[in-house]
Length: 188
Image 1 (cartoon, rainbow, N blue to C red):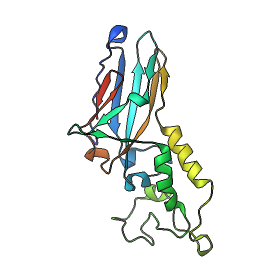
Image 2: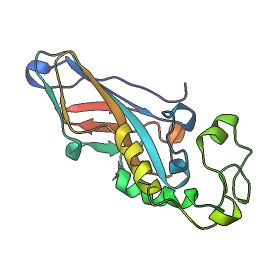
Image 3: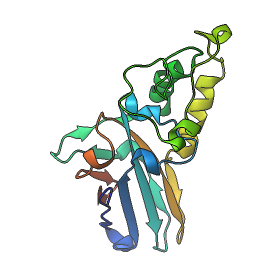
Image 4: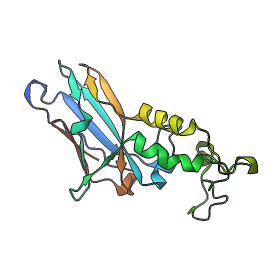
């Protein structure tokens, strides 16, 4: 199994046992279509969070209260789309280091066809060093659309999304930690 998913429901009061949360450390191959995989290369990791509300009351999600801990119990800082997008824009400049190994000697292996289809390539000489003014906003919008947001989950409903972390470890290397959200805990 590429990562451990453990489901634990620990909600106090009338919702006890009726709200569940799952957390999974997401690997590159399991990201959503269109997700900029270079986020992994620039020091960020992903957790996918799923919340299911089987209670008779709405469940509030307050991401300001979300805490993420490593396997050793150290708190891992969250990253926002506004932190990630500026780091990724440099990869979208024409003539810059390509993600398929062209013009970039540090790429560790030949990419898969899926990676080639999902990532930018080096540009033509007329575009060297240039980047579209809207590219940063496009990346940020995409990251925001995939992110779990604060709000409430109605009775019988589910909510899911990504949480971005400042971590050089990702996927299986990040597994073994846990999250705390309100009174819920989930291991990943």
